[in-house]
Amino acid sequence: MSDSREELCRRFLAAAGWDSAERRLLAADASFRSYDRLSRGGETAVLMNAPPPQENVQVFRNIADLLLDIELSAPRPLAMDREAGFLLLEDFGDRTFTRALAEGADEGDLYRLAVDTLIALHQRWYNSDMTGLPSYDEQRLLDEAALLVDWYLPAVTGRETPPALRESYLEAWRAAVPVMLAVPQSLVLRDYHVDNLMILEGREGIARCGLLDFQDAVIGPVSYDLVSLLEDARRDVAPDLAAEMLARYRDAFRHTDPWAFAASYAALGAQRNAKIIGIFTRLCRRDGKAHYLKHIPRVWRLLEGDLQHPALTELAEWFAREIPPELRVTPQENQ
Image 1: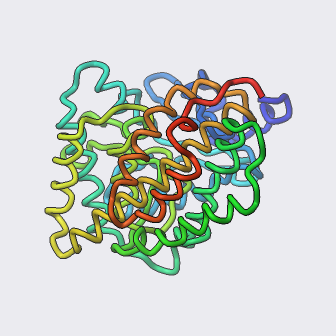
Image 2: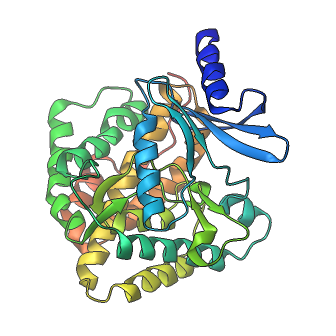
């Protein structure tokens, strides 16, 4: 943190009554945000440092309030300085689902809790003009998918993607967009996976599932967060477990057309995985964060599985023709 930003932080903490607290770095992620844990006596809180204009703490607070309103466990906002980009939050502790799994927690129990939380979100969610959240529309979906040809493809071919090839790629995705959107709409948290889910001791039922990292939420297809959970870029989810969780979700929404849901799930899985391959390449090439590259083989396997769905024939043909298996490699770290 720069000296000037540190001074802004001190003023914020003083105004919030936490100026005497001990601070230590809790986490940083792929964005511009970082998090500190504050401790004073027996109390703790989490400081979100989200520097504008890249970040907007007001959006996080708005979505947290919406989630709390439908009785899901988002961290309660305690204080905020929107202009400076600081937010003080309830501390959910350290036990992410990822940590619990590493400690030997039952994988099925955790994934059932995560799926049941999604079910509750989609059952309780009420959309209104007051949310102000953007839609996961065609343009947003295409812009994200384009990250693969804008970052990954040049990294493995050694040349910029020709405009005609980029347009043919987007045209193949345009054919898949109606498939993605042919399911009910709800709040989409967008990074719903075990790194961003917490176990909250002392709470019962789905209240045990703490939600993090939802500031990029949109209104979009209910299938998106489920595929985010079960097609995890950072860890393998056994096919049997994924199938069980899909069935668990579908059993709660029997009115949803099963073929349309499966097709949307596959199409959004493909879109998300294409986006992630592009993002992980960009994090290495632009931001010097090469450790994300180790996940690219897994993400390619997930993308290849998604493309097997019969609703994605045109897209699968594009990939087979333009990015054959020999190009589906991990990019080199050097520029």
